[in-house]
Image 1: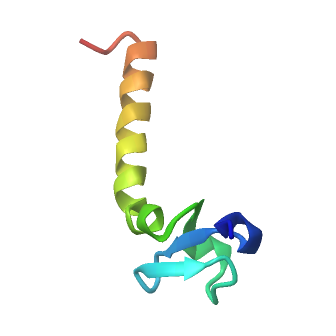
Image 2: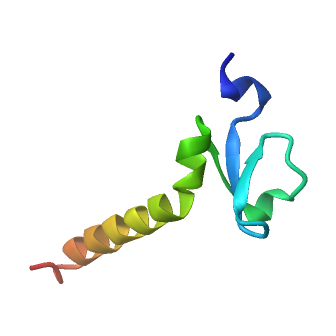
Length: 66
């Protein structure tokens, strides 16, 4: 069964744990959806990697990159 059927998995910022799509916390406290529990557990690392990539792309766009 696909996790997308029930809404996927989310990382809860309040409780610092994975929640299913029907979790108790409001959307503003959750990152996701992710296809697997393992992906949801890595949510904060994924956010950090994406932010670094976006900052690098912005610097390149502005001509500030090496």
